[in-house]
Structure formats: structure tokens, C-alpha cells
Amino acid sequence: GSAAAVCRDDAGNYLGSSSLVIEGQTDPATLEAIACREALALAEDLLLHDFIISSDCKQVVEDINRGNQGRYGSVITEIRLRLLNFDCNFIFEGRATNGEAHSLAKHSLSLGLGRHTWLLSSHDPNCIPLHMDY
Image 1 (spheres, rainbow, N blue to C red):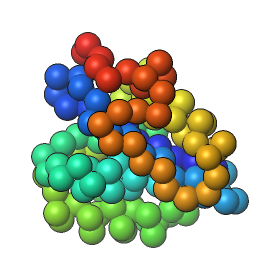
Image 2: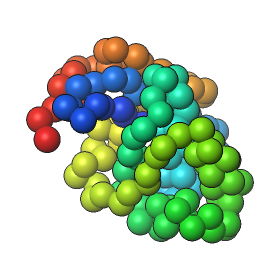
Image 3: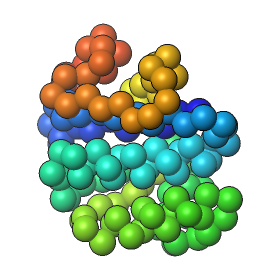
């Protein structure tokens, strides 16, 4: 499976994106939790400290915010530890707002295992444009 994150500033400008391709992981909720962890890693790469991470999986957002453990409890624990270094909020948003990350996750499956990062320009400006109007 794969998980991905796309980072934009509050004006809609592309800052960076990253994905993680993992062998054998197919559980959608676990992959979404991993995508949230990947978003934190990307924020760290970009030297950001105050930001919002949105997810289209309400359960994962609730688990992160409440510290709930479960089948992806180790990922939640890591996220909550990383949060000590940031001023970050996790929010639930519908899938329409997360389309870029899902497209990137799908594309990343063709890149092989491991972490893939794009800073300043995306892997495909037609898929992830450099600017979006909100």
C-alpha cells in the first residue's frame, strides 16, 4: 500500500509532497494514519511549525485527537509524540479536499518501496498544480 501527503500554504501555493510505499499494508484506516504521520514528517522537512493536517477518515482523526489505540495504535503513539514539536491540528474533511494526496499515493505505487519526496515542484504539475485557489 501507499500513503501520501501534500502541503500547501494558506494562499494555496504548493510547498512539497511526500509518499511512503509499504509492502503488505492494505488496511485503509492504517494507511490513512500513516499518511497523517507522513504529513508530520513532510512538515518537519519543510521546517513548518504551525499548520493543519486534514484527513478524509473521521475515525483516524478522532483516534489521533483522543490518543485512542487500536489496530494502528503504534502509528497514533508516534504521531502524538511528534506533535510535541508542533502547533498542529488534525481535522476531518471530505475526500474532495484530499484528492491530490490520494492521486499521489496511487502514483507512488509505481515508484517502488520507500519514501519519495518532492520539494518546491510536484511530481506532475497537471496532477498537483503549483497553485490552487481556495
